[in-house]
Image 1 (cartoon, rainbow, N blue to C red):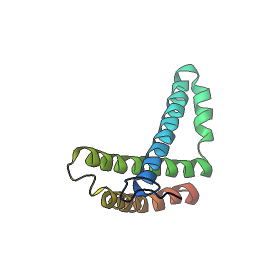
Image 2: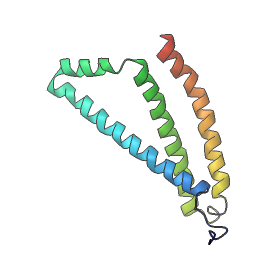
Image 3: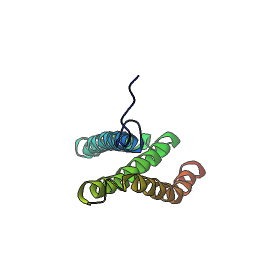
Image 4: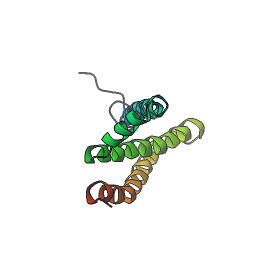
Length: 126
């Protein structure tokens, strides 16, 4: 059975999973923006309908969805900066794996600062 060539950037390694996660978070952010534009446009059509739709967002499931949205945006932003460095910095491809771990570290630190406050707002009531 043939084996994958050694030293490739993808083939199930960090680069491929970063690529997949970047595309998934991008699609999720796109759908959020689509829904956001549509529900915000309701204010021009019918302010009562707008208020009803916004009222449905005030529940714990949507609070968790907001946390997921922040996670998607955070990862997408940090990973996007990594992609720019890989593409435009001469040493970027050499350090792409290290930069991915930096992205993951920044993501964890950012979410660790955000999640306690968000979850206390969602489940604590304040």
